[in-house]
Image 1 (tube, rainbow, N blue to C red):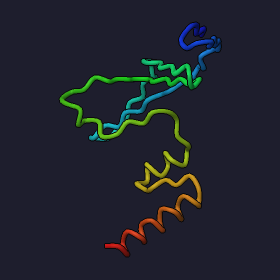
Image 2 (cartoon, rainbow, N blue to C red):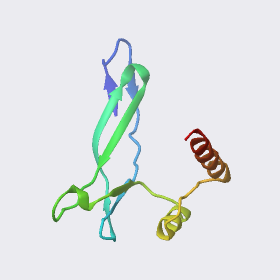
Image 3 (cartoon, rainbow, N blue to C red):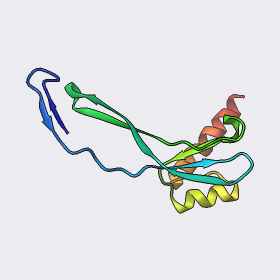
Image 4 (cartoon, one colour):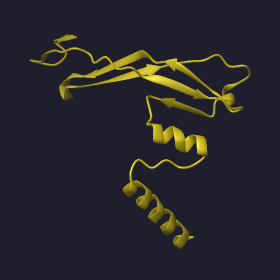
Length: 111
């Protein structure tokens, strides 16, 4: 990627990263479908030397959008998948579990 004359005195050149973003569509009636993400939009903010990339994916629907209650973009750990299968909440660390429990206790005390 070469960017010239976007801001005074700025001349940038770099390679766009290659990122694989799979999408998993969870159906309301159970089951899931995986689709590869397709790069859709790249936004450059040259004066901040930042850019964002947006991916998209789609699947055909039988009736309406309510068939798909959840979409996962990217990859999750085996622990996340196991918690999902067991109907449990996934915590990436013990600290996250403790923070969630304390927040729940605070909400109960305020109610």
